Structures are given as C-alpha cells and as structure tokens.
Length: 393
Image 1 (cartoon, helix red, strand yellow):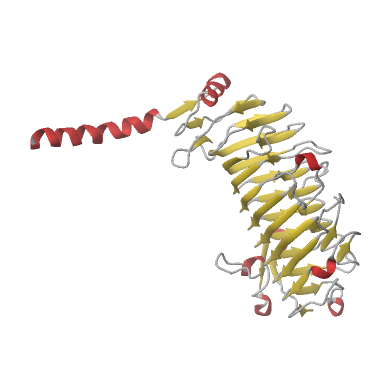
Image 2 (cartoon, rainbow, N blue to C red):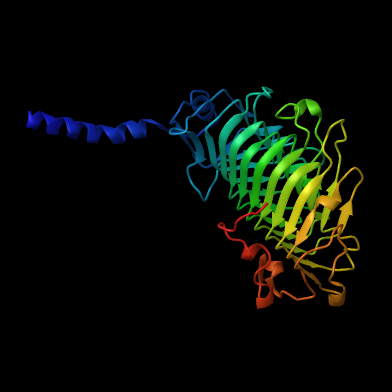
C-alpha cells in the first residue's frame, strides 16, 4: 500500500506542471490571437509574440475568476506587440478578471483601449488590470481617449505610458475603487489633450498616485467632469465624482494641473506642481441638473508649488455654482521663481500652516527630477509622500 501511495503522489507531482503549461497559449499572428481571445476561460494565459497586429480586436463576455484571471500579455517585455491604426486597438465588453500587460497601441482615430460594461449600467465589469501598456498618438483632436473605462469597478492602471491624445488620457465614466499608479502622461504637439485622467459620471474611491505629468493635458487631472445623466453609474448619483485622491504625483506645465469639477469630496496631497501655465487649480461646476451637488469639500495639502507670476495671476479659478468656502488648504509650500516676495497665493479660504518664499531648489526639473535639495522643503511634494501616510478626514 505504501508503494502505491508513493507512486500516486509522484504521478500528481509530474502532472501538475503539464496542467499549468496547458493553460498557456502562445500566439504569433492575428488569427491565432483572435481565436485565443474568443475561447479564453478562467486561467487562460495568452502570450503574444513581438510584431504588428491588426487593430479592432473585440472581446466580449470573457470572465476570469479571482483565483484564475485571464492574462493577456506581450511575451517580450523589451518588444511589446503593436496594434497600430484603425478606429480602436482593443475593446473588451462585459469582461471581468482580465489582466492586460506589455501591449503597445498607436494611431487610433477614436480610442486606444476601451473597456466597458456593454451598456449594462447596473452590472459593472470588475477586476481589470492594465500594466505596462503604452498608448501613443490617439485622435489627434477631439474627444478621443487613450484609455476609456466605462462601468469598471476594482481596477488598476499600473506603470503605463500615454503620449499624445485628443480627449482624455484615461477617461473613467462611472468607475469605482480604482488605482492609477506609477504612470507617465506626456503631452505632444498637435494633440488637443483636453485632460489627463478624468473620473466622472458617478465615479468614486479612485486614487491617482505616483504619476508623472509633463504638459499632461490642459487639465492634467480632471476630478469630475461633465456627463449626460443617462450615463451615470450608479443611476441617480448626484455628483460627478466622490472620494478621489491625487497623491505623490509630479506635474510640469499644463494650463491647470488640477481641476475639481462637480466633485463631492477629494484630496490632493503631497504633489509637486512645477510651472503651471495659467492656474494652479480650478473649482468648476459643469453639471447643473436639479439636485446635483455643487463642487465642494476639496482638500489641498502638503503640496509643493513652484510658479512664475508671469504665468500665474489667478491661483484658483473659481466658477459659478460651486462652494469654494468648503475647500481646505493646509501646509503647502509656495515659491514664486520670478518674484519670491510674491509667493503667497490668493486662495478662496485661509490656509493653515503654509510656507511661502522658500526656494525648494528642485534637483533637475528639466530631467524629470523633482526632489527638493533644500532641506526646508523636504516634507512637501511628491518625494515626501509615503504609502503609510494616513489621510485624515
């Protein structure tokens, strides 16, 4: 009996790797890629070889699980498969537990990557991971997004790069419990780049963290926006966005690095803002339907702002139908390069614990290095952010 027991265990051990290998599908052309996507099931791992692939890939109703997500990735990290041209590169409708990794898309006229709930507004898709995705040259003008997410919950966009787009770099409509982390958003001449990441249409509990914005949109981060009521998720939400956090990011350029638009509660903290071209931030209301909350309850704290009076005459652009008096400003460092004595900003409310006129001596902004060399500035801005810093309300 003992002998047979040992043989049985041995057979299980040698079969386990075979079962794992059977889940991996390697593809090298359009036909095999589309076939693998359409037959994907929990645990499927699709490896896409380097090369050019036909855009317009449509994937519908593919469901992984928490233990066995569907993974779709380029097989060579140094040579991502490229989907170039067309209207869209990749579109996933009604798909959950999907990881898309190491993919490049370029020169789409509508959207680069589109992930949505297929119009089933009450049934969100969920657990989507986009990692090491590069999206370039989308649009170039008008409402054409690099990455578009509609009705997506529990998602992550990690270590991605977007360069040159029309509408939004990441457009989130009715999305919840999301994280955009460690991404780069690079503006490009000839592209309208209305906003960088935008969360609107009832979006909530989203963090934008450790990202770099170089001329990354007219509004580099749009916290809120303007959405037709029929597109809100959940239905009946009376805010564009709620409980949004922007932290540990570095902004260089942009007309307004940050805009609060129809938002009901957001925190912007430990960010470095360098040379905004017109405003440091905006407080706006673009949706004014009956019962809709005015833009309110924003917090701006522990940020490091380096500006020029030649560019910034109004620090906070406040629009009608908003409640700027509900905003809080605390413990930010403000430095005016061309007139250090004029570093103190005019804000909608009194600021607590701010520092004015101290040159942070940023390491090398032209080389994307925003670490302050002046020790008096060490507790401010993106390099001072840590994952374990609590966010008190």
